[in-house]
Image 1: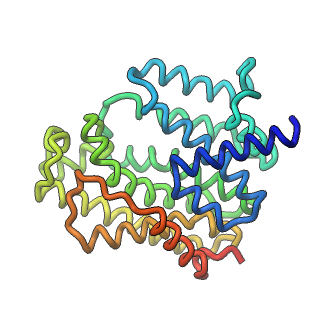
Image 2: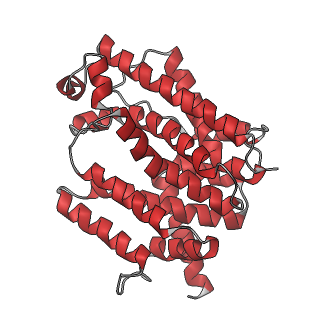
Image 3: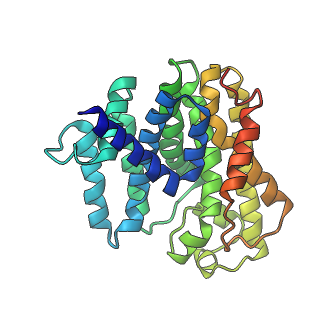
Length: 287
């Protein structure tokens, strides 16, 4: 591959992440160029996989797209890989940083849940799902930024759950409109809430209570992650910058009583300001 082609692939990945996952894009602004390029290839892959449910109207075409990624990662794809800038960049990153293919394919497998309208059954199932998706991204990003260290997977798992719970709450308006349920059924049952109440999109006191319960769990995972991060290599800490956004969003949600079925997007300026301030603190500073 020529240097021009490689640079073009890297630029494509950066643009894709910037457009579809600005939080992760912004978090890469606080690491060096080589690490940033590798992280953006990983995050671009995640964008491609998570967007599949938005690009198909039936599960089968989505499964075909997911299978293409499995085949690409395992070396079974014949032709076409070189023409996909995300795949080309990701495979370069996988080779350079010895990223485990099985973790990437597991992430693809977990997103099969997105293609169907089956509800998330339990909180344990949600934790597993978030750990194998968001947590996997944290773990692989950590492997890119620093040598292996004890407790890396444990830290990444809790970070993924903290981030994922906040994303589940934030995506509630869209998911409810599509009759898709990531809020676990056992949590709904504990609060006496039925699925149809969620799909109706009306913020009852019981729904507000269960979302407050979810936020409590997110904060517990967030606090535990930051405790573990104190023992992690400093080079890993910038990867955790996304958690500064989690803390900000949690704090704002706890202070306000917004309608959970109305989108409340964070501005890009607020995102950059939060990350910049956090990057200057010992908790997230790489050195």
